[in-house]
Length: 102
Image (cartoon, rainbow, N blue to C red):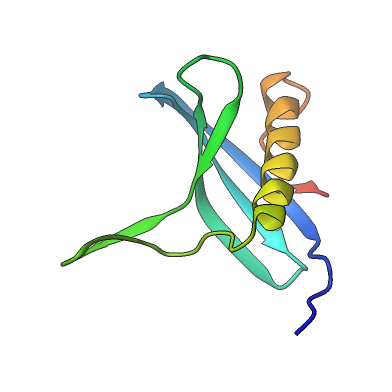
């Protein structure tokens, strides 16, 4: 099955008081049809750059992802979209933290 390229149509960044590298949470809308909330944005330990973590649920065998990218290409597309909007938020060009139409 061939899948068309996904479009990230909305991005929302909510900054939090930094703790253990966590600096914000992101929500995205993919193809105008599914919203993914609770994507954590962490500053890398080196202080250079960011990384994303996806929500998990604890069960009797450990933690299980609620959702996550299945391919490196999808992961990269989500990272780029979120990190670009994060830059806007951190540069105070978007200090209201409203949704951004990608």
